[in-house]
Image (cartoon, rainbow, N blue to C red):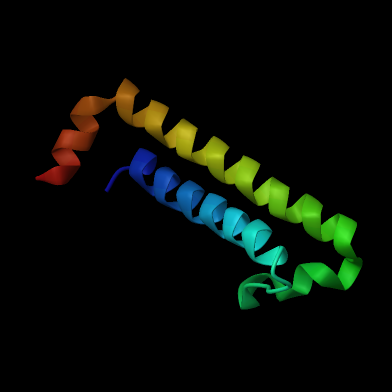
Length: 79
């Protein structure tokens, strides 16, 4: 695998986790992985959830751009 694909995987995981946490918050549920963020209050928890989505999206875009800039590397890794 190349760095772009790894960054895309990590980024999409973070973004999905953040979106899931935001969605579940409306039903008073919390993913167990993120239960600790509520120790500092709702404002900080919202900030962390939004940051997960933003950072995850940024990593995904950076990984996609790396793959587009170096398509030969992606093809070599597939073999």
